Image (cartoon, rainbow over all chains, first blue to last red; front, side, top):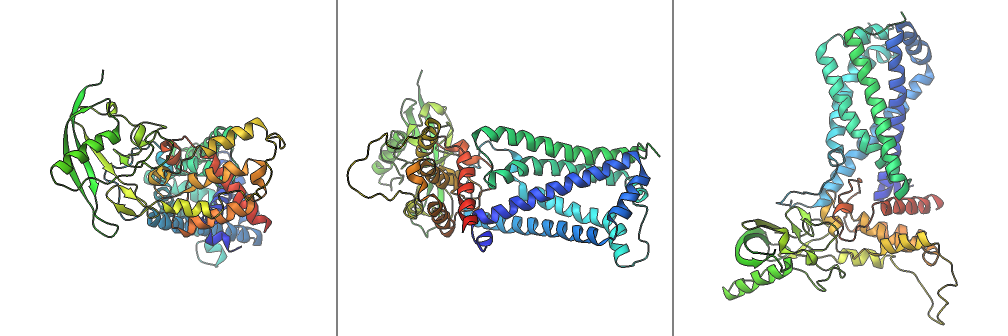
Length: 224
Length: 251
């Protein structure tokens, strides 16, 4: 299986599959967040009993972390190789070819999302699962209340919303590009896949944004 | 109506592959808008020769858009601002009086500059030699209709075969990727029964050669498709990915 590292299409295939896997994770994550709008108790039950420090949740976290590591690592390798392939001399008349902005800036968007991820992991995951796992003081079992506290700061909400917009841009190119790289595209399906990608990225980003803003404005835990 | 225009051309001059290049700006007067872009460069070179200077070196051959020899990155576009044509089919009526036109060679690690505006595109020949053919035994001529081919397949194969291998896709790509070229050359054969026989080996060896020659990894920006003078579709790239992955998983 060395072609997954040595061949350009192999490397891109790894990037494509890890990206699609992360999209599935984001769909799950977003669905769980939406619960916050309706009931804190249900959210805490899901967070503590279904996930929490159970062995399957730890295994799941490990797999998702691996997905992120592979996606980021391959993203860096591919970008460095592509910069080298482009050559040292840049065009003086910079490219006027009309392409989508996000397709040209996937690495920049990815880098921004990575920085956001560090903040996000510290604010949420470190306080909940990590501290509990390593028997540290102050592990939070009231996840929903923690989220509400974090989102009571306006700057946090603004940073998160900006990150979700970056995520939307990253996914609108990433979704169809991943399927294209996996060979699942043709002239008929091109438009359908792009539309589907726009729907998936909008659902994910909008779901996250709505929860963040609803928490800030106090429209959460509506069912008690 | 075509007019005569006065223009400036900012041209990349570079003496050799290892030398440092620079831009040189030349003024041209009374260029007919009815002349082609390459005719304008011919006029420039005549002017330079009369002044005792070194003429600008650029690639060209058929001058009717079929040989794939002309190149040139003009004002931010490979083959100039028009869609679906080569540089030799570009006319001066696309430019206005007083314009400064920037003319650069293809820039990519896979296409090193030989001199001025000429780049070494033998990398493409090497990729073709790696598998872009069908092996046939010579002998009696088989009947053309002995193997039935669905019309849509034949049309798609012909569309892919329109690629003239000029390298505009590599020039347009921010990743210096040759995937559009390789995918067209793989597709034109993979779509036909005669090409199916060697399809797996062809996809693997052409991609391996492409990687070896230092072309980048495609990120599906679609810039190649926009600038391709023959409008080769990037769905060919999806087909190449499919062919390659199928071949690798079968191993």
